[in-house]
Image 1 (cartoon, one colour):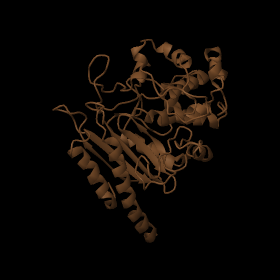
Image 2 (cartoon, one colour):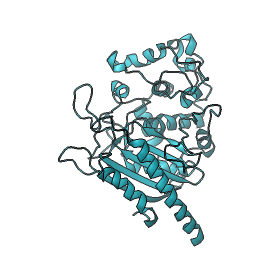
Image 3 (cartoon, rainbow, N blue to C red):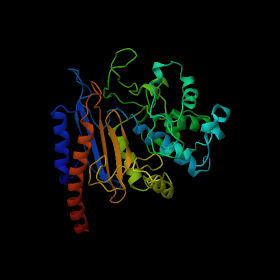
Image 4 (cartoon, rainbow, N blue to C red):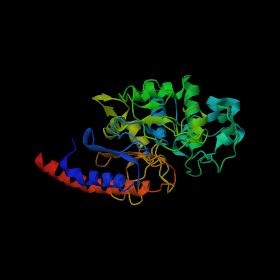
Length: 367
């Protein structure tokens, strides 16, 4: 049930679908642990007999995977002392790491300052998943580690491999154990290898480069596809209901369902700008895109933290107010040529913030 203060935000979301700007869009928002509104519009695909989407429809998270999965696992391992931010690649990967990359640390990987290229279409070069890590480690760096923020899917693929090496478990197992099971995110995980997902509905993305078939429950990202759907940069599928659980935990400083999921101090640090010398602000696995040029428009505070996904997903929390917003869309269906998503996010973020201020004022006066 949506609070009546937020009907304009929902009307805007519905209009974007009715105008054909995206095939479907699910939106959820709240303050702290409270859900203030949610709704889903559109259909799973442009096909004639497509089903309508709902809060349990699976969406390909794309790069939102980085936050939902590897980042949370890494923060948990930092909390229990298994991992330390200054630990280097050489410590865990040994002689597989060339000399010039041996000083790259977990901190560098989580802040996108390692110097790796943004991405490489590795599926065009080889087909064996086991070649991915050696290939990335052999690829020349863009710049000296620690000298510049340069967003990199390759760096997060490496982070995922390091987490697997440390624990002896793959990311599918790690994310279920450290993230999705504790947060009761029962329809979230790497898919279709994750047999715990039982959703009957999945939003379509593009046609597969490999066989030309629609990608439905198969990861859209080419490098994650090469890694058989389990990667540090992409591969997780989730639903609006599950993503709202995650957002509520973040907004409540690491507390979920009355229990401490993650140390509030560690989470606060992860959501704080770790590279203040750069104009491209990053926390530990969190993108800090609040303020004038922010992902959700100029009226979310500069402290807003979260992540986006190439397929049309996004999740941000504003720690200044406790306001959070989740938007899931399949904007890459039928093709990735759809460039409307940045404006859609900003419009919805701005209208939500305006209505949230009215709700906050009345809510405070009522108490």
